[in-house]
Image: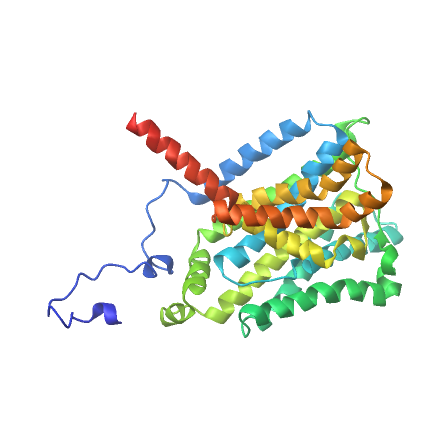
Length: 377
């Protein structure tokens, strides 16, 4: 309102140009960008990326294909997580528990159909949709609390969720089978791919499809009115409210979207091993996820890709060191639980000092300098 009032010192009306906040709000003029439909542009990018990864999986060994599948499963989670933390400014420490919710939902749905002798290719997408719905509902409950809490209070609530969900799985052993977890039928390749088609490659394709759908939907979402509302709420809640944005509803919807992505990632992660156990979703997983999106580049979907790659690479680091240097069994067990977290923390410190925008920000800065140097010559 003060921007439209005459200047008290000069007595002359200033030009009524759009403020930076106004450009983020619904109805504001779109910023200059690439021409053409945003959906078609993102769809073309997803098809290209999917084709390249499929060609890559045709050349990889089974274990490497399984790593590609794990990266894609984590990408579903980190993409939704970075939208919540980076674009909406809400801190959650419970996304590991949301992954567990999605994974257990997939296991329970698949076991229910298997016990009744029901089979079919439609069971997998149905179970993944159930996982997304269950975690979105959990995200709705957490989001309602998030709309009333800020900063460390919100972090404390989500941290309690991260510790509560694994505890529930051990308390209700009749449903979740305690520490042993749940097993369900493994996903096998379709018959038309041949009898010798690599099962790990099929799993990588399933995870890749889930990751591409997640990134495609989120890429369009952040470019929409809702995405601009997310950023407006993050930057200034009071100004966003004065501009007509329902702040609480926006924050709740951000949690719902992010939780649904975490549920899909957890469901895909469970499909890769056809088993779910509370030990797969410890509290450390939530910390790993948070550090991954910060190191990759907070608020960026490309940074979420970096984070997913780091999650898989650093979790395999202890076993790689053990096999390479033939370490004693006692030392190997200690490294198994602590090395990945220590390396993740060290990388986080180094990246924050050298490149506060994360790995994706560093790559963009380097590319901009190279372009400037090329134009100078």
